[in-house]
Every structure is written in structure tokens, then in C-alpha cells.
Image (cartoon, rainbow, N blue to C red):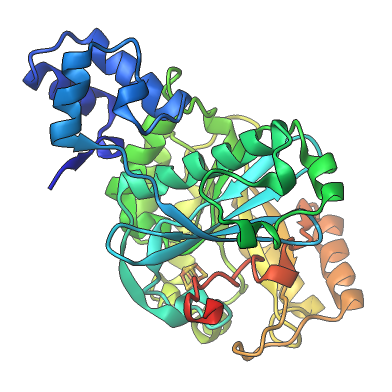
Length: 375
Ligand code: SF4
């Protein structure tokens, strides 16, 4: 079986080139073709000798996840269903913001943690994604964004079939998003990122390479429910910002809605967050999905303030979007606003996040890569 060059870090690519008897600068050229120019065909890597291109073709491949379906939301959010080499599927979501795109990435096929408000959790864990599969989502998204910038009809990219384009962005959305660059990454898609730490760490290191994808650390956020022993390692790496999916202010309530995640006892999680290394003005983002009648009253808000009083935190409130397969209701908007106001009045920074892409099941907790639904 051929090696996928997208699975190599920069130093591994240098070793690979030296194993072929090539000078280190060849790795730099290849890296640029792979990540900056998004080239998959060795034949078109024109500054590399013909002889080396032929040898590369015999031993290696450049394999991206395959786009099998693209859906565009009324709000401009685009969801990609991607097939992996072994036939598994994942989803990744491109979200337009005011002056850039944010990509929400998956790190696992499914998830072992089974949070009760999350469609991915119902799949169970199938497997971890490789570095190539994690970063391949960015290559797909950048190719799509490049297509928008060039004004390709309704955002069609080379991977999309004509009938897929019928579900793509309308001309109006195309106009709104043309010229935006993909600058922010959030690891909040399918899977628990810190349970795939080794591949995530390699992906984050590769992301920062100036001759490659070249993302700033400040523009990358990893969202975790908290994995014992992993927060300090992630913090020490300094590779990205931290967001924690908390969703409940007490151990009992957290154990009810996130039974497996809550095995990391709340007091211990909070103690790790209080000791987490931060830059002077940096804060940890606390994600809190408001489930109607479950965790959304003012008593919960007060408990949350108390719980976080030793943590440098800002809270992101996410009103739950109901779906037929999940046993929760949307919160009342008056309660949501009262919850937000209480946090702010006690000096805890809070923002209300409007979930995007709800009409295409691309909002928080809605990803499930349901291939059967396409048939
Ligand atoms: S919320 Fe995150 S950790 Fe929980 S089941 Fe869903 S993907 Fe897994």
C-alpha cells in the first residue's frame, strides 16, 4: 500500500526525502505543493525533477477525504459529508463570519462519550482520524473557498457532482462570502479531540508551518469535555486555545446529561482549569448548551458563577436546537437572556452564540455523518 504524504509532519517528510537520497530542500518544495498549492498530482509539481516525480508516484499518494455531499444553509453555512479511504464518513462545517470563514473540524469517526444532547455521541466511537484526515478537511474547505473567490457557479468545486451543486449556496450567499478567507479553526465537530491527542498534536504542529497551511495559534480552538491528565499536556503544548464543554454547574446534573464525560469529577476538572497556563489576557472558553428546563434557570446560572470563580473564563451560551432523535427541548428565549444577564451582572463574561446551519443539521451537537439519509 502506498504512503499518504499528508500523514507526514515536516520533519518526517524530510526523513522520507533523505531516504530517497534527496536533499532537504526537496521536502520544502513538496510541503508547499501539498499544503499551500493543494496539489494532488505529482505530475504537476513542476519544480521537482521528472525522475523524482516518477519515484514518488510509485511509492506515495496524496489522498484527500472525498467530498460525497455538500449542503448549504440559508445562513451561508456549508456542511461537507466526506468519505475516508476505508469507507467511513465524517462531517465538517464551514461557517461564514463577518470578515472570515471558520471551519469546524472532526477528530474522530463517532465518539465514545455519548453525551445525551449530541447526535455524534449516539454513533459510538468507530475510530480516530489520522493527521491526513484531520488536515484533509481544511484542504477540502480551502478548495471550496477558492472556488467561491473565483466565482465558480454556486461554489462548485472539482469534487462536487452537478446535482450536489443544486443544494449549494444561492447566488446571494455566494456574493456575501466571496473574498472571505478561511482563517479560524475550531475542533468542535465529531469526536473528543483529546482522546485522539497524538494525531491532533501532529496536526496542530503541521498547521502552524509558515510554508504550509500557516494558521496562527490564536485562531485555533480545541474544544474538549475535559480528559483527566490531558489538559495540562495540551496547555503545555501551547498549540491552540482551550474551550471546555461544561454544560452543567454541578456534578449531579453533569453526570445526568454527560454521563461518561462526568467521570472526570467536576471539582477535579475545575481545579485543573484554575491551574491551566494562560497568557496575561487570555481566557478559557466555557461552552454551555442551554437545554430547555434542564440546566437553564437562574439557580443554575448562580451555581455556574460560583463554580467558575477561580477560573479565568468566558462563557459561550448555546441555546439547544431540538431534533427528533434527542430528548431535549429548546430553552425559552427569555430564560436564555436572563441567564446571560445574570452571568454578566456577576462579572462573568458571557456571549450568546447563535447556532448556524440548523436547517442542514450542521449546528452544535447535530453532526452524525448519516450516509443512509442520502439514499
Ligand atoms: S458532545 Fe463532544 S464529547 Fe460529547 S458525545 Fe458529542 S462529540 Fe462526543
